[in-house]
Image (cartoon, rainbow, N blue to C red; front, side, top):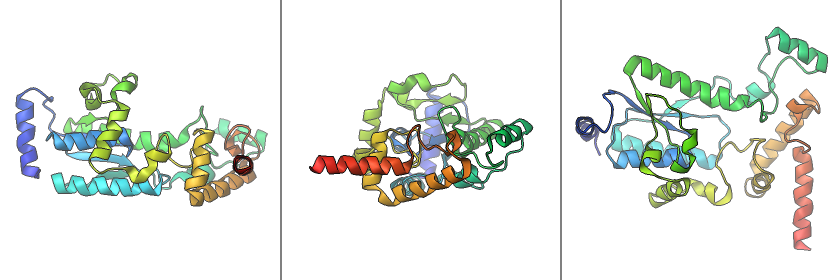
Length: 275
């Protein structure tokens, strides 16, 4: 579909009352199955797309980077635009190990605990600084800018069986929910169109950041097996965190488990399975 045809479809769809009078349409892209399916379906349906926004954490699987590049190539062929990629100016590891702390209360507490006045340490359930600084804040800032400057309508890829995550915002749309597309169907939509994520979803439950300490033990076992180079990098990061922050929450990858301990556990379990 050419960009000219897209503009024609935009006018006809608005005339039918399918969309609001918004002159600008942005699509959120996480890179996962739901947001990818949303983008693919919007392209197929001839829906207006002016920008596609993706936040690159720098900690995605290599296969995900290839998937994003493939989507970008399709978007450019169909609409003549590229994915808008947002990045934190310093990245995950700088935030984890080097970001200086400035709040007096934080500095006082760290001094009391003997923790350096810099670095956020490992993210946790209560303090998921990674999601906020590497994704949410960047995307929210860009979406708010587009709303203010262009009265933009923003499309978000949440599947129908996750509808409880939708927010009641006038400038947000959730087409997968409106179309009744479930998570399983979203993945199949991607597969049917030649987007297989490099096999990530055949291995892992979710294709998010490979270093996430909130992932299940089983996912970490798979990481060690299928991506040993990333496992080695994770081990190095964990050693550095424990050396810098100690045995407290900031230096603890997972409650009761370091990467070294997990590696020993997985190795032992493999030997038991072979016995």
